[in-house]
Length: 136
Image 1 (cartoon, rainbow, N blue to C red):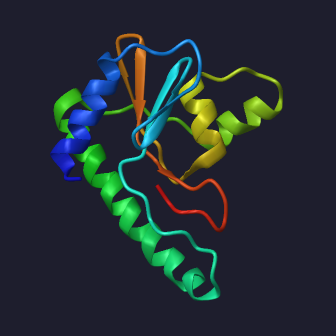
Image 2 (cartoon, one colour):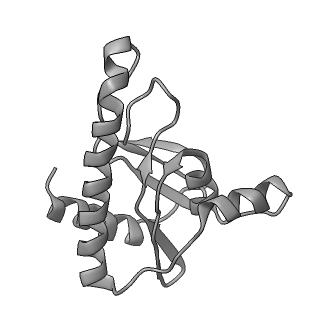
């Protein structure tokens, strides 16, 4: 997928209705209050040799996140700042979080800049569900 396709995916998801129940979708999932699109997915990291590749994979994914952030900033203006670490602390203290922030607190690594577009929030992040699984 190229950068313009990713921007198009983000714009589509902003307009798409949110489901009442979790639904699988091509390269992602939708659930109440949230659409998740996996724009890139690395290989998994089950074998020992793969451990060395994790760092360089994360760097490439971070660079792509930054490029997408720049493209969306050009289109929608500057994003806000959300400290996912502080949000996770609030969640652990029992405070409910918005669905997008709640999801990213469980999988995101590094920055996750949000744009507020009407009643929707768009966030871009590098996600990693577990140590052996692919980056997305």
